[in-house]
Length: 315
Image (tube, rainbow, N blue to C red):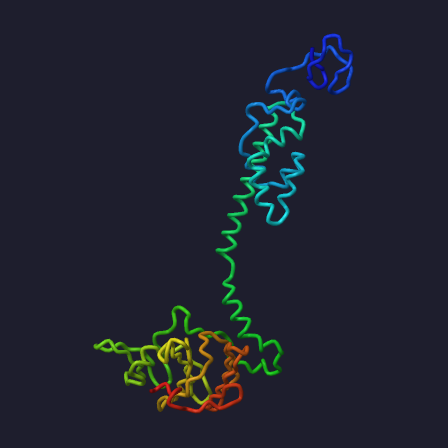
């Protein structure tokens, strides 16, 4: 004779169940293995319960709450959590079977299957989102450089109405011009028959030698009176420890003359042109260095840059 309430075996003449304490009834008890009550009473684990649980492993503490397996909350404890996650993966199904009431083994497996599907689905979705975020996130290094370059622009200037041009220069940018048409003629980079490089103006050699292979135009600035200031880069020719230096070619109808080279070795900076004055800001170890071209004279942080053997672009 079996108890109609908990399924425990009873003596034939017992009036009350010795396990659950309820009065004996006459209702039949389903003793099929797919029914859940019997394993709960004697602690046995039927076939089909044991096995790996992706739901318990991937969702760990969430799964533990849903399946009343409170020890699984240790998964949120630092350092211990990953060990508990694996433990739940191996033993979670058994704990869920013992700790929660199930209608049948089929009911148990159906619920645990849904937990695994949700765990795998959420994990795959998180991985896909992380990959997409990494693919489309902005280059943090470029953002930091831009913020550094533009830091000194925070105070509003009262003469912004006089700004002729504003932008960014980058000697490492793609699609830089191979030549520029200037008021003094075509400024071009040329490779000679012997493989040497030269910078020419209107077909006449302007710069030659080792440095000429690293010198190239970036952009031109129109000045009053038909004059022009052509920004040039010298990248690598003076040694690999300094990535880039800059200089101007001051051009008019009669020809060009170079300014001294200047810069902080940074390849990227911002510029503002106000009439015939061109102001550059380049990042340096102290924050920002300001270089100004005005009336044909280059100053760096307020100090004139004199032409020497080390900063002469024609040498």
